[in-house]
Image (tube, rainbow, N blue to C red; front, side, top):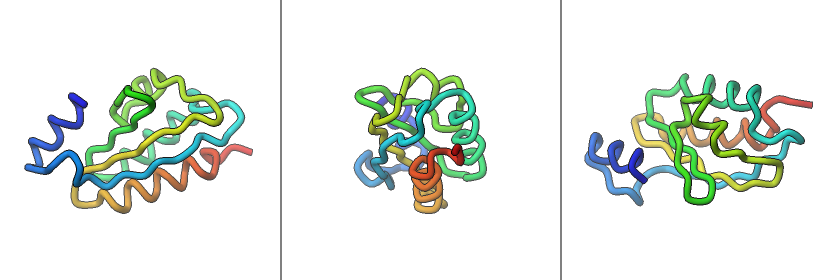
Length: 105
């Protein structure tokens, strides 16, 4: 929660007020390098701070390397959280990307 607490304090937000969505990794290879790159690229289009959580590990959603450390395989559940002016759009767009298998066949 260290990343999130620093984000909350920046915005004067409560931890539980952030927009979030729980999704399941559906693509065959999970959150591998190409998928992580697609996620971070899409996340970087938003001004909001974005965090991805798997189990008890939280990472910066705009960092490919941090996303890879989640080791999220097919069937893994992740939570996407965002704080900022476009948090709703960010969470919905990123959840849709995951639900569509990161655009992979």
